[in-house]
Image 1 (cartoon, rainbow, N blue to C red):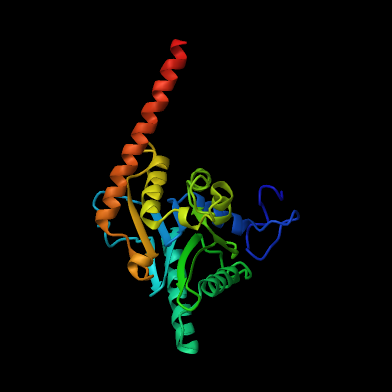
Image 2: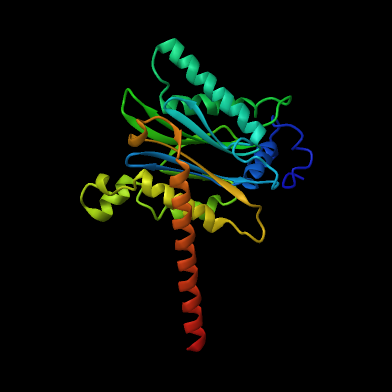
Length: 278
């Protein structure tokens, strides 16, 4: 009974005998069935990218169902899962940022914003009259006081972590594998290069290309719906303000990504042909 959730999945306030909360697990499942959302912390900023499925050809994609939102001058979020649930989290993030500024006269620190959002999300897992949010949230923010930029992710269970690279949605696991190959972790880069590492970390300009490549590589045109690639960044070039990546830059990154994928597939097919000849 416990393994199937029968009798223990009627409320998010009920634990199963083996310590599971099935309503929270169902919320995670809703995120896993949604479009892929990625984030990379770079040497000069943070980049967010989301695969936004286009449910119909008649959709006005520029103004409908946006997955990337600005919550404050130096903070932005990317959502995946139930868009309506994500919209409530975005509104809460904006309220938290505004209230912090009014109370303390400074911009909300990234970690504080992440912790307050996670507490809000966690509250909805504590009461039987509520249900968990079926949405994961990636937070990119910059703290003018400490000159520090960071990437956080809030999960449906209410936990939050800080990342060098974060992924959520349908392609989470393969995307993580690909991001681990990039130069995003200062300690790993320093260990491999021996020159301190900071100068060899990936930049936002390169991260835009790499994230586009990952999302297009994971997209199966035969099975998945058409999608729009939404991207934003906060970096030195934008004055550390959260803004959308220019459409021209996204278009160039898309062309580069598709070319790289085609070349990689061509090399694989050649290798297979050689093996068959042998």
